[in-house]
Amino acid sequence: MAAEPAFTRSWSVGSYIATLTSPAPSAGQVRSAVIEWSPNVPGRLSPPMADAYRRGRDKALADMARVLGIKVGVVEL
Image 1 (cartoon, rainbow, N blue to C red):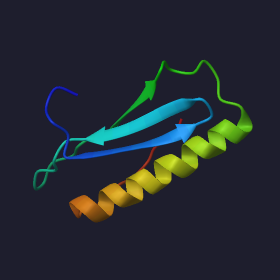
Image 2: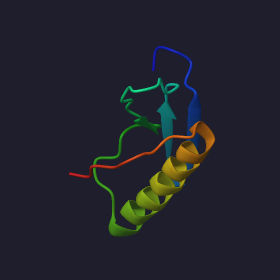
Image 3: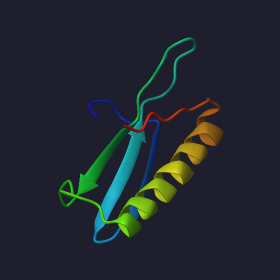
Image 4: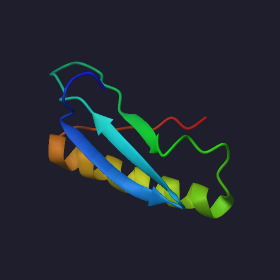
């Protein structure tokens, strides 16, 4: 992200680290969070890794909603 994020959380997914970042919310505006992977984007997640990813993502989003005082939603394709 170009600007300093207002919110950042990281969690382990197998041997990877997923990091969610989001800019500060503005009244009446929609914002998107970004998830980056380290050391690289995994080609495929095993079922246990997918579960770990979703648990971490959901906890990070709940924390973000609480900290920033916003509502969040997820569209998973």
